[in-house]
Length: 301
Ligand SMILES: [Mn+2]
Image 1 (cartoon, protein in one colour):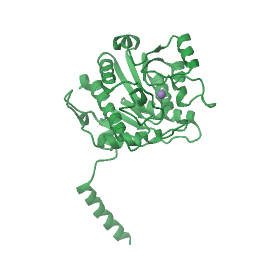
Image 2: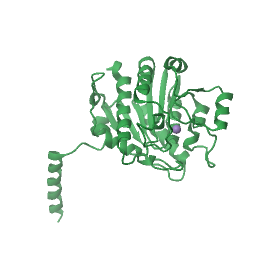
Image 3: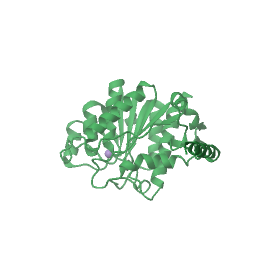
Image 4: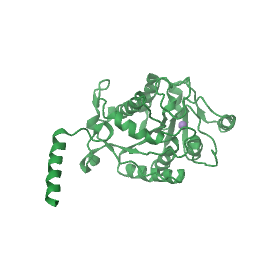
């Protein structure tokens, strides 16, 4: 019986070698120790939506982005850049805590610190927005002279939500306590959040902004947290809290390109994708990652 199993496994292995599909990684890139060592970028999927309300679903976001990415071009024809040469390593999904948002955030922090210690750019795939705090804490622990750029429809500046200080609607309030940040695309907030912005003179912009003004506000190193609801919901409808009158693809890409040219993008996260049968949102998210990487590494090849 033992012999038979080995025999069958050998056949199965040969079969996979012959007809194997792409690995379940971002852009279908190789997953091996060598691939990790040569990669310049490491992706951390975080399937967490514990505080999402009223519609959950962001826990499936990272998986949908990875799946969509396996079917898009790895070549950037605009910049003449092959992303395969960059080396993008996809980690296994982070084990989240079902009981505590803070515990999940701490695990994100630990994982991102590890990525930074290995001198690789971290990309965190959400999951809901609360996980970005873990990444910013890690960056704070390891780097200086960093601004956070928040691309988001919502201010996310509540001090607490349903008794939780680490809910996704509080994430920028917590980030503001530890880091300088600039918010762009913000078009929805409570009265209290608006007062908080005014009292603290925060750099918050709506959908009409001058990108040079934003560049002036940002420090030399920039970590970007992208809540996909910053986009107009007509192009990315699969988000937990869609908000009308958002930004369009080209507006966001032009801003990101300028930031990559004039600053150093040290990492980013893509959060709040709640996938459904509309696959276009997933493809937009995957393509957005490719474009930011092309912009960030274009001059460094
Ligand atoms: Mn948000």
